[in-house]
Image (cartoon, rainbow over the protein chains, first blue to last red):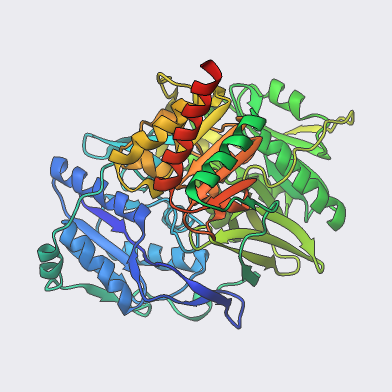
Length: 255
Length: 331
């Protein structure tokens, strides 16, 4: 089974982001880019599936040259190939168009993504790309079972402890829920070695995309600010002992 | 009529989910402002009970797609059915819940319709004549406000609790049964069965005091620190999703969107930053106490009482104080 894992490179701590002049993206400075944690779980599941059923894993990322690091990380973890689409765009619709076009260029049976990227927190691109390609999909998948050649059975969360078992014909796209497999540690030596491997890169022209298709439309980001607080929190200060007794007093009176 | 607002009704086991009544409240406000109709769309099989409990909840019209094939329809097919109804009715906005169901459907409906999806929204208002949503970004540390262009159609997925549910009134809305040939839609997937997670040995939803631990605890070895506090206070131990994901506590202890919703008298969050997925599972607790070393952590936005500090110092001291108080009382 050939699996593509979509990995996004996301910023660590972001300081003072600003809305771009066109109102379509947030501009920020962040030194540290790392693999989106949700996507790392998708990669772990792909590694488990590969072990059981064979095939190749391709890690795919859309982003500038800096996002190549997450692909090396994927290779170090055990992916066989890496592909980067040279495009930076925060719009979910545009990103899903680009991703769908890239998927058409790679042979696969299954596409795995995470559920959400920690920067945009929109959780749209995977399902939107599947919809564009007419692939079946499932969100928040917590177990994957391969059934014969062209079918898989998955368990997905519905919330509140409820699940659905869904059968999907291949090729299909799954948004993998965190915790599906334990995250594995990658020894630094392997990470260094992985940097010797080739990363294939697609330009937007390679994907046959240009101009109007790639511009975000229909909305304008007005502002970005700390969340409004529903009420003012009262902070308890003092020595550890003072804090403990003050807290206990408040707890006793709320019982 | 063109420009209407359509709310997707969420239901399970013959009951309408509360989020639907919240969406109807949000939709009613918009519909009044825009002078359009508010439509509730229910998909399923044998919808009589659902339609009955929707009645009087602010919509001008109920559209139902009643088809046995929907019981097996996975997201792929549901999105096509919803998109077909939106096209037929020329609705402008589709509102649905940003929960595990809506997260799957919203992007798929948007692609079917060729419109934007605004997801993970925690606010929806009219501001300066525009429809404006607020949504968390950057790990929930910030919110972005996004305005739809004038007249622009969109799918909007709102977090549970963003609006108070609409009150029931006596008005009865006309019901239309829409005909969509569900079985004929292209499909490569189907729902085999729905399952309830087996009950564990503890039900965190029943407790009056919940002491909850997040990834700020750092290692599994430190969990007993929090468990001891829960014991000393006569409460139960719970946690946020990351703690379950790394295997430190079982799934039945998880509070949040994909876990349980708790409404205890006292909720103590230890080392929980407060991502929106966690907040919607506990923000209705009577009194929320947060202990976190980061003063900017979103958990302080919902907490009534907060301690900015090291939980490894404060938690043991609080446990000790609680034990001493108990001993003094019984002694």
